[in-house]
Amino acid sequence: MSGRVQGVYYRGSAQARARELGITGYARNLADGRVEVLACGDASRINTFVEWLRVGPTTAHVTAVEVAEREPADYPSSFLTG
Image (cartoon, rainbow, N blue to C red; front, side, top):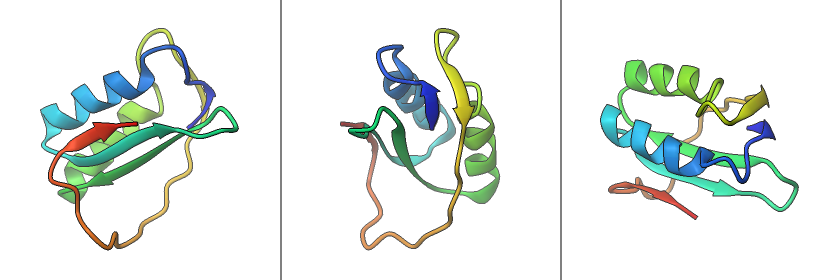
């Protein structure tokens, strides 16, 4: 994600939404000001989560979301922030 996504509780809000949807993975800040999210779970739930990521919490201003499918080496057992 890019835009105003750091310092606005984006990662914590993403974690809460992911847990509501039963999605595992992580949300972490990148050095360039973007947030990277890995989401693992049912495709329809992932799609719902991605739509939420495009908006984020009310204090965020998301300008871009890049989505790429990949097979992680190890699926996380929960959703973490870092």
